Image (cartoon, rainbow, N blue to C red):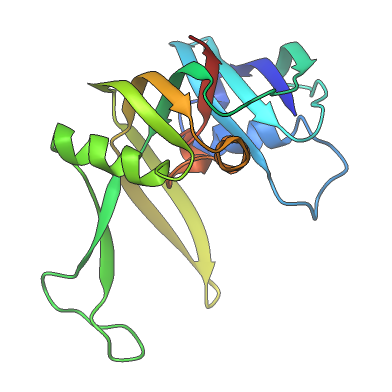
Length: 207
């Protein structure tokens, strides 16, 4: 696994999906591969660009526009009973039935995702996600700036543009490893939805 620091130019920062595409350019010659990297925007300088922390299975390479500032191969040596500090930008949600009772093609009531607003619900969401792998000693929650996005999609020869908003939450604290293999799995695949928008990357360090 590689951990990298990347500078993404401003013209690719304004739309999160463009930022994701800019990061994908750091892995050339893989058009058919799954985009198995996670990232977190660490800072943004308006008009200049964004500094991004990225975790990937492959070693990234410089592209014409996105600069690779630093990159190193890391080996996570986790063991049961280990205490770790953690940081996670996530999109805690729940799925509910459509209030207007609209149905899908099967005649079933549609289900939609809604953000969890209450801090207790957000913490409970995180605890469920990592229930098999860790025990939490402390969890601090802070609300971050919303992520606005728009995405074009081709449907039946027509181009449809979707717009929306994600409300990310930053979780920080201390945890104790309960199952190192399960925790490693969570670190590799990420936690929760909106990974293409910069959510889901769990960072850990010795406590």
